Length: 307
Image (cartoon, rainbow, N blue to C red; front, side, top):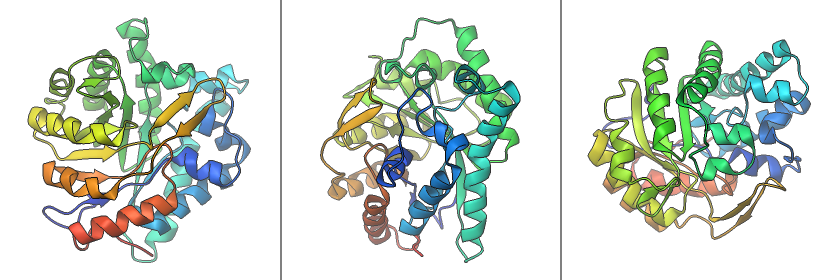
């Protein structure tokens, strides 16, 4: 799975898919968020992947963060159509990857696995503790993990997980399915978004056989370093970090009010702490990833490719 070029090198991930789509003028309101475009305007998703790859990203994260069979059915699709939409998220990214890989680049596709709260589309993905049973979480995640695995991604991006209870369910399922994955929590300060201590949260990941990295995403950039250190200490794995641009999420309009852009001066300290996969989340577009790739290339010669 590792697209790094050697010991100590750093893989550049993409940025916020929603941001790249918004920059195209796409509408992302509604409970399906970016997943709506899998049915309505898949060419926009492909264009976003192309833009990130051309900016220097080596991994494309699929439009499946908020995609599930259950969610599509609730939106009026048949069960068969819903399954096709989830699979399409991977197919689109793979087609873009294969086209650009023909130009001599080593690129990969990470199937996004968002939290249960993303399916709820009520902002609870940033709070956790959904008030549902462990079996409900297992059933929900198992079905889409299996479906996405069958679509043939290179790895899973298990991301924006706010809650240790959900993490415990997910790591069991990841080992059952057996596809490499990174796992990233959303955090505030020294706790998960659900308020659990980070040392406890990352210790849940320590025995997961399929993880290739552990870390943090969709969190404030100044919370990254502490989370990375906790992740490395608990798991011994390389770290993954892709913060958002700050600000706040409006669950009614399905929009971010963004804060400051990524301070590239922080990246060196993240790499020194063990980050080997770095990118951006909400509010980070292709131009931001191009700047990040340039900075990473200076820290880790040969690891950040550009077209």
